[in-house]
Length: 441
Image (tube, rainbow, N blue to C red; front, side, top):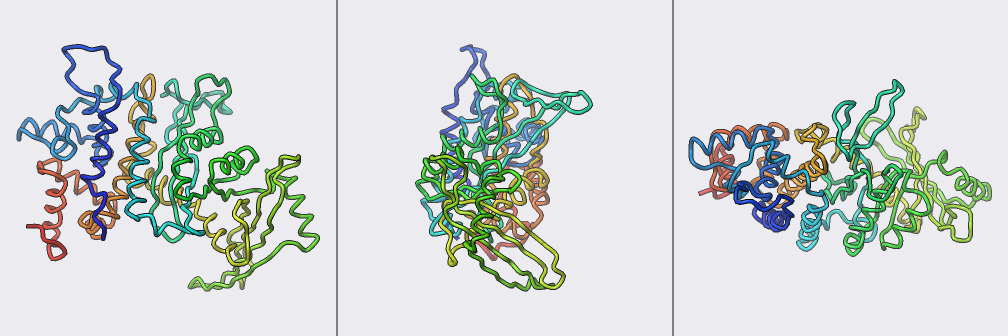
């Protein structure tokens, strides 16, 4: 297993970015806590998945003269929770985007994403929106409002959380999020498609240089967005529903009536019954009317139970990858990979200890979105450590349940101070009598 991008390396990426964050306070000789200490302290809460992490470390500092947020994360003075919220509120979440991209670049340079490449050396980047907070009473200036049928107003925070995914891979790699929130100079309420365009303008160039195919649902399969993707030198596979694109499907039906559609069928035993997967595809279909209409390629997947005839799955997509009998199976599998973002990224964040939908704070500016970026960064750190830190990976394998693993870390850090990350890992390895795998002396 490679030892690139271990905990110390990830910290070396995080800290320079945090050191450059702006301090919006007026200069004062009474300033006690730095912006950097506040940000790293908040990150420590998400990394350890312990809401009381800072309180426990303050107690350790009082009783032992040192603490884990100092030895593991480099914090000099631990601010209280309210001070953390106050200091983080003015910070735009985009300040943390370079950390995501630097980790992505580091993984690429060390060939740690090679196993994610499909379709002739492409990385699949799944775009999907998620709502990470909603309330009828708690809100802030960047919440989006929605009028409910009972006359009340629901305030909520949505975001696009792009993830590099791959069929057959159990994990995804988080990229910088894009928040759906009021935009300066725009009277119209922000939406997922507009946020997707902003994400492209910020990050597409960097991912495109590595070879990228974007995956997304039906709202992305319109002409302006698809053209923008191609202009940024990316490829796309987007769901395309007949109800949303009636004119497009009239053209597909025309070519079907003229026996132009190509078909491919496969039988697969899933352990209980035989599945029949039918794929139909067609190249060079105009996405809309007009001289400037974009020509796209279309495919449809239907999976049925061979014996019962029951339909198990159906979807149709458009792509700019030219479809052939040799690649249509791989393109279709890649398109289905979009569901991994919900199953393996957002669901983990919501149900496996990261408390994605918890209200960590609503300030007057960016607090809630900055907190989410820190949470996503913590998740990214954990993902990379499973790939690159052999001791961490072994511990996660032995303590298979994610929440149990972090419960152990929380308990250890509540009562003991570790010299550094390696000290913590070695202590857990010895405690589980796994020394035979490593030299922990």
